[in-house]
Length: 165
Ligand code: SF4
Ligand code: SF4
Image (tube, rainbow, N blue to C red; front, side, top):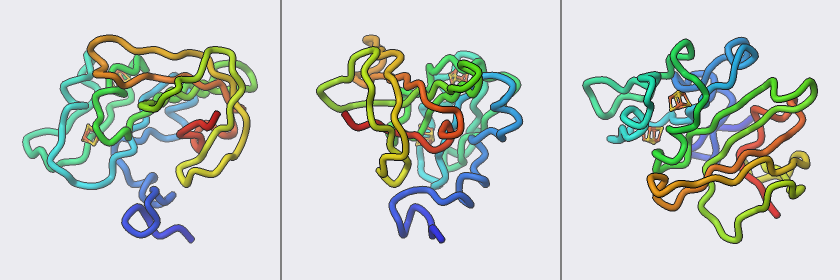
């Protein structure tokens, strides 16, 4: 059984289930949403200001964990590059009848190219499936962070959090 990020270096299922920024599977089945995998109380809040729809709340104490309002979230991904911990993703469970689109922050070179097939890694860094690069995006405001969109079989949508070329 996974003990959690302090012991294993990656989030356990229990930590994910208790994170106020992680929407439920029922909510994810309705529309694309941010998945904020932030579970350690640290003094940090740029994600709150990055959301143009006020869907992320940290509140008065900067030590609070980010809370996602799934009703307000549009799945736009503007919050992804704002997180210094690379802890924010967007998951579109219904990209097609069989595949999901997972958007991840990416700060490595070389960058993948659209259409490329890649290994998709889980939070432990293990390859769990193959995926196809859907998009590679950045802007001046992303501060050198890219957003990589990966099309994966939907059963891996809540596992895939990185790629290997
Ligand atoms: S995906 Fe867009 S709407 Fe949703 S929390 Fe992030 S910035 Fe806000
Ligand atoms: S920016 Fe990232 S690390 Fe900071 S509070 Fe938001 S999700 Fe957590």
